[in-house]
Amino acid sequence: MAATGGLLVVLLLAAAIPAFASVYGFEYAQGTGTVRPLSVTLQTGNSGSSAVSTVSANAATASVTAGLEFYVSGPPSSCTAVTANTALTVPAAGSVTLSRGSSYCIWSLQYSQPSTIYAGNWTTDLWLDAKKTGFGMTVSMETANSAGVGQSTIFNGTTSSASTSESEVTNSFPGAGATVPAGGYLVLMLTPPSGGKTPVSWDLYWGTGQASNFRSPSQFDYVLSVANSASVSWSISLATGSALATNIGRLSNLTLWFPSPFGKEVAVTNGALVQASGAAVSLASSGTDDIAVAAYANAMPTASSAPSTVTLSLKLLSSSSSAYAQYTIVLTIS
Image 1 (cartoon, rainbow, N blue to C red):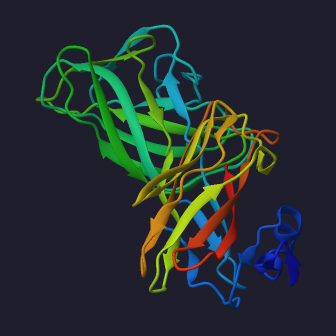
Image 2: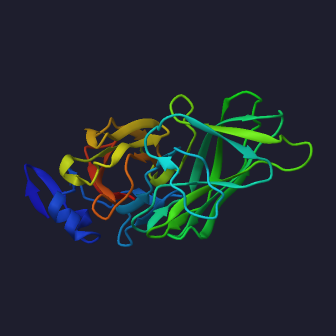
Image 3: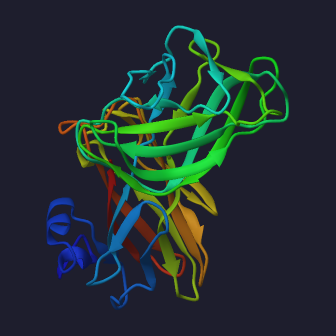
């Protein structure tokens, strides 16, 4: 303990994560009274991956995946060999006819290193027309190795019904977590339904004005929770700084917020930290609030560009005194 400007300072994190306490100086300070352990703790979430300090619940790590948007840039292949038919930007327009009962594959760009994709909602956004109304198309997502051999299934589903004229068909599918191997791919398989009453063929469109694409999970609603077991409320807020954010140049968007009550806390746009801290929100007595994260990348992960990391300070201010605490959270975005 040390007296600093009349405030009693205790480095709570010294036992949990000494490097953070000594480098960043996150601390607990109290103007008067006796220093007591706080009733507010961090708890693990149910999306992405997270862990809380085993010494005291005042430090945590969390990991999420930055979503990627793969635009169809050419005709889907027959799934027998890897075909370059996606891009990260909208390509020139084109179209192709798909026959009923056949399977067609859309391949992501190649992953240069193993990449974990956490469970979450995937989006397929396809511009289609069918020769008969009332039918959807079977879709599935899997990982594949460098030779194009399937490794694990992420989701299976059916799109909404397509129109007989060109229209956008957008669907969301919950997907399992998976790891794309080094040199591997994500593969979206499209299978128009078979049978005499189904459409004879479908048209798939892509490019400017009709940008068919698929998107990997980007929003994680509950990566950590802040729990208050006391009979008094606390105000909570998040903050970071440019020196505490590394490899964020690949992120087109990163947003952290408290959902309820709502508070937007930290934001990165086009690789730049545009909001380093947010307004405090009230954490009710015996209440909890979650920490939510949304992340999108504009480039494939590489050994030099990923992962991105942001070290956060969670500040807590008591409603019954001048006591406050600052906890450490290290967020990794793969």
